[in-house]
Length: 555
Ligand code: FBP
Image 1 (tube, protein in one colour):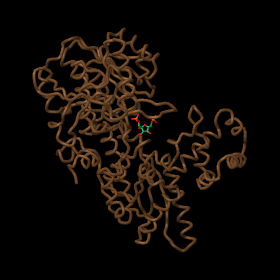
Image 2: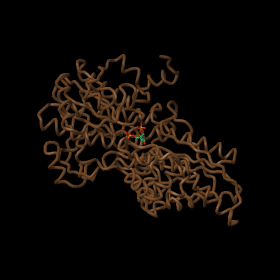
Image 3: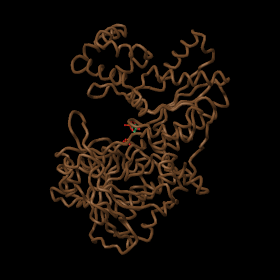
Image 4: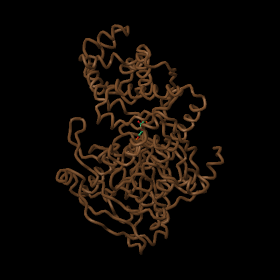
């Protein structure tokens, strides 16, 4: 394999650990905190997790290591979408495991949780792991989206663990995967398997965070990568002065990615899905809001701009979700065959207009033709519309164009509007992790092993105080049940980790809200540039603006 100079240089990078983990394995001791309870629905969660509920928060400190010495065989799984730094979690886990006892073994289950069920694995050694230090991607073992949630799967997992003599499983994933980690931990304990389960918080979407977890790993690098690209586009836009760029960024359920990119680059427009839902905004009102900015800037001679659109926004537009719901109902079961048998789009349109409610038909009618057709082409295995595939950047630019055409007819606007479209998602998920993510992930992995070594089960590896230099970070663990509540999922009450959406009264959104009117009319672009890996700490060790605002290190 040909290595790039950066890859070679990154192999040499030594990730920074929190101060309390730096003196070597023999000097890490545990301080137990208070017993915990779940954030809501305490009685129900307690009943569902009788063996793992209510455990104590723990913090590591410098002091004599009192953990029981036994051979550890640990299995690790990467779950869900790629996020920069995943390799370093495994490297940190491996290094702590080997530093504790050279005979300890780390097994990687391939292609996500299904690797555990199918017993598809590899055993890590120095030579293999060293190729992945401080690199992006999940290719070290691969990832997947199979959910580990049924009794049958747990029984098989238990057998696989027995076969390898596994003492602990580390699951690196988002809110769903860590919810399942908690259920698996409970199952293992209830069945006296002797296998512990530890989770690590991953997702570029940034929606696995709460009072205990300051941020999920990967968010820092992914948003810095998108912000570099958005900044470059802003500079091009401000140079050419002839295009409006509509840029969709990943983030299926929450708009943390869009908000962070806006804080870093100060675009003219950034939609925040949570605000769209709270204000019950319609497609037309959103288009009108963007068109106002186009017109104001045009009046100042600026027929150009940049708008950031969060990936999941259309699902937050109430009238659009109703439309999707009606389409799903309309084509449920065999009714889809009747629709598919129609040969022309005109016939299909007729079929649709006869079945949608008047209100939904009005929404459907204003959509551009390609989006209308997309709603009927890309369907998931259950026959439902795949909202994440809707090209919302094109949808909004088409709606803005229609709005501007109306204004032109009324003599309210005579500018030029040329739109270009972009989608930044996969570009950021496997970037070389920033120093922050390289350090944070290595620490999460190292810390996960210490939790295993001290016998904890059903805990999330927790590293906090992240807006400070790594020396001051605090390492420990939090029972996953503490983060859970009961939510309705697929018609059933389920214990889940609460997904963190953008808080409209939180400091990052408030900062954005205070500045966005100015940004929408003037050109206030900022150009973050590429992630820097070597150089002064003030450029290489920056956290996200979101974290800095939340923790008060930026006002
Ligand atoms: P996770 O929640 O699993 O971390 O994945 C997040 C994400 O990157 C979303 O932003 C995006 O919508 C989705 O994954 C894309 O998934 P896929 O890789 O399956 O196309």
